[in-house]
Length: 108
Image (cartoon, rainbow, N blue to C red; front, top):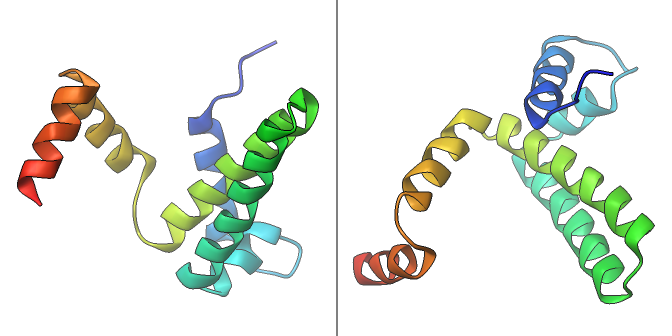
């Protein structure tokens, strides 16, 4: 079985964004705009936190999947790519997390 990656999910979202019609939940989210997508992401984030606090592994996995999906949809709605986010992560992981956070605080 081939491993499914977040890049696979991003590609599916791209395909569905390019399609029309009422059959795609992704397309419906995108049609409502970035603000709506952001609210949906927030809802999924809260549900993920609740699952974690309740120590419900199965629910955490399911909500984590929803969270990742809605995050990628928000990126798409906002004109940001997964590669844009990965580039920032690559920069941040080049130094320790504490050093990176201190540098961000100095820049603000």
